[in-house]
Length: 545
Ligand SMILES: [Zn+2]
Ligand SMILES: [Zn+2]
Image 1 (cartoon, helix red, strand yellow):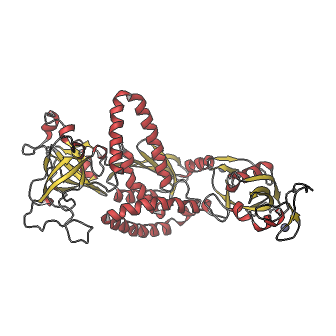
Image 2 (cartoon, helix red, strand yellow; image 1 turned 135 degrees about the horizontal axis):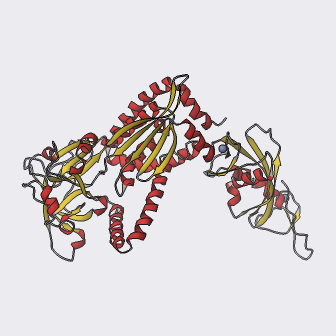
């Protein structure tokens, strides 16, 4: 550590001795000479810290083309101990981007070319207690192998044998994919076999080394979301002499385009459907879709509940018509609730599966639009499945059919059962305590009004945003940074926080996912034993060798 060139002593000013070593100096806030100050504040630790506070800094090198990563997507050729490599190293030291540190000089400290360590000597200047000090610091960077995007693309194209294409064809497909996102973010075991993930319109492409991996992966997806899987195999090349062929298999995973809270018109002709000829709300999406009638008869609620598998759905796809989605939900204030079952004790609310209260119970409810308060006295009566969820004074989210669906909608009437009366209001769920969800709904509505005006521009913008959102989703699932452990953990925490909140509200989903993970762990063990060699191929590149 060397002191800065101190200002030459000015004879006219008063000098004091440094309180540590006694050298005569001009008075300063610390009453210490720069040498002593610099010793007290050691900058090594600060300069040595990684971007997320890690104990060391990692530089990625592609094992295949030997290039170094300047940014995660840009790899460059640089000789050992070259100025180019030095500049890449400096770019990786986060502390140097802070404006109170000034880099004066940087040079190499020799290391073995293959030891996976780079050492640089930095001279930095900073101001401590308004005294300028200069310090020489050695920073060590760890080199880790990570295939660059170009090599990775080549590698994937040569090695993948199975492709899983997940699609959900609906305007806000992001919502439906969210469940997959959460499940994948939670489950590292299932992710580790994915060679590469590409974002596509309405979904993702996942590449795998082998069929077995892809099959396991689709089994997993099928339990998280209702989907139809179609499998096609294509021969890429064949060797007549050895009688072998290079086959590539594509699994097309088509997610049922229905999401929780959707209002669905189930056509009269929907064969075998309990709720045929009526409107229904989607209450849950997992391996199957669960519905509850939107205007249930006053019998037991189970008479109005129905489950639909992906196979059943795709058999008569046209008979399930999504009328309104979650962003059209409007806030209603509950004025009165009366359970339809007069024997039932009133006032009990559902508080999770262990509260001893049935999740859904039919009730006659009177509500008013929240926006009508102080404007008019319009009230609506309806029968809802939310009897155990709401009390007078609560705010619920529901669809306002008076304002959005004309009763003279001939096409819709045609599909409804003769005995079905179209409700004015369909209540979907209790409003979350914070207004966030509702606010989003309003924004979307506004957006759609504007869309009629600036339709084209808006549409293009939306599509761009949608693609970006899908890419962000892939990032959250942990695919873009599986190699950098520390980043995964950090990202994972974010996703986990949201996810845990979701799980706290939905213990059923939590239990389901737990079972899923257990099943998968078993599935996967068998898989690893059977195809140990394949696995090594993928993981080799992830090692911090
Ligand atoms: Zn001193
Ligand atoms: Zn490369």
